[in-house]
Image (cartoon, rainbow, N blue to C red):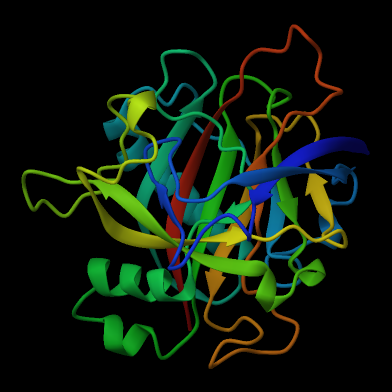
Length: 295
């Protein structure tokens, strides 16, 4: 176990209106506050946690792709590896559609840094919008059954000792903990149906709080701090391990088709572990976001 500080939305810092955040780096309409929490090590206890009961799961899984410097290779080869991983470990999967990925490297040149704010990647409305965007002719039928968004997270090149990933067990959260937040994207000059996630350049620090040149194209969920939240991490997680993070489940408890005891989602964040050696290399990681449909 370790003890660390976690950044949460300050629920008194925004409004009137809905809070917003930018996809391409710092910049939002709210303040954040830091809260100290114990973080429990999953290692040796992985079998106790599943995407159904807690909202996350850890698996041993070596990848053929190692460096993740070629986007085409990632999309052609690694995506297939991730689809096989999901089909092998989640029962009843009938269809997987991978819609994007993000590579984060903690160095001064990378536009995408580890994100130190407790959050969930998609709201229920954003999850359905993803189905309709990517599978428009099948969407009406697909959303009648069980569907999920799962983020598959893996360290790159070396263990993620520096700024590791922490998750909150869904069972320790309440629906009122989650705050829908507009996600702003840089405006595009064309109408191509791809995600402009701001990977090319880092945002201007002088314009973090300005919405000029941005538009709402998504919705995430910030997470209010609660002392009873249970934090976990996979200490020194290696490139031969993956963590599945559930962002949404239409069968999650409290949803219109929900089942009691099924996790809807899991909050997650990067954090600074005080036990990290001073000479640990900067964290590198890839996260692949997947729509998963069931029989």
